[in-house]
Length: 329
Ligand SMILES: Nc1ncnc2c1ncn2[C@@H]1O[C@H](COP(=O)(O)OP(=O)(O)OP(=O)(O)O)[C@@H](O)[C@H]1O
Image 1: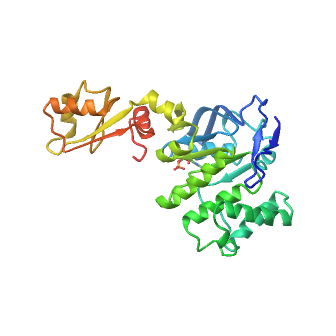
Image 2: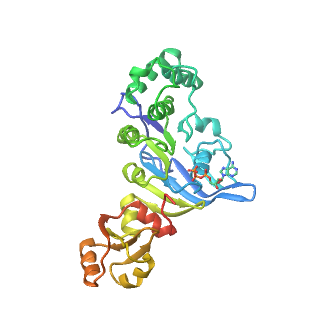
Image 3: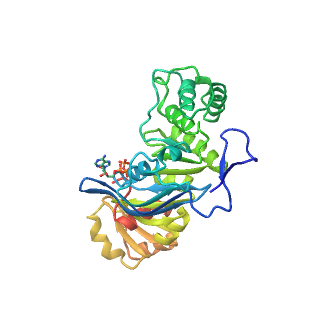
């Protein structure tokens, strides 16, 4: 496997691009297992991550996403199966792999006692980067994550979104071949999430290989070229967001609420409209390629929902179809 710097983009963040002749995926997992005592957190998953793609693990809390990321990050040994990262074995070649990974953990692990810039320069020194280069790299990265004005401030007073952006900058210090992001926007407010997405999108545009976990379907839809839907340590489906929606949902969904009776009494009355019905605690979802036609059919049956919403299908619908639960349950 040959890695070379992209000549097209000399500005930060520098990009490592896999030589097109390399056949092996950057991350290849087959039958990967993680056990904690008798409990199986990851139950034999197959994953291939290719150079330059943004790959996501979408699933609810406890799905096994972080356990998988920790194995890929070479901080937790697999209990079974095979895992190769950048053509190497994470157990034997952990330090060599870690040197080429950028890791953005779920919990911010920034040093609160030093400045924003020092968080980057000190980290850069772990990778053997010279003091002068570290300083230059830190300044470029602070500009990239829009924190230049806070460079000399301590970390503690920064907002959650700023801390997350600083953690992303830190993950880029060593010019990584793969950036691992565990729940990059969990706990952030909508504006801060959008800023993080925007920076990640920039990285993606520059060809950086991103691997992220999320339980936000909008995050997965916006950022991921390809993703796996994970639940209970297993992968239920794999594909691009669009492929998954086409495969597991209809083009549109009608959300129906009724105020006059228990919801399940309407299931029989709606039978045969659209392709599928899902009963949620507060509404019925009616899957149909043409939502308006489905609504007309509902009215023809003299049913009077208290509210009707026609929307496009999302990954949330895919997850519901695959697991019978919503992601936020
Ligand atoms: N060190 C550990 N010891 C015992 N059980 C663990 C350990 N780490 C994780 N687990 C369990 O493994 C399961 C999967 O956890 P994991 O953190 O991988 O899920 P996740 O999909 O990342 O969810 P979250 O978003 O909550 O982190 C959970 O039931 C969790 O309690």
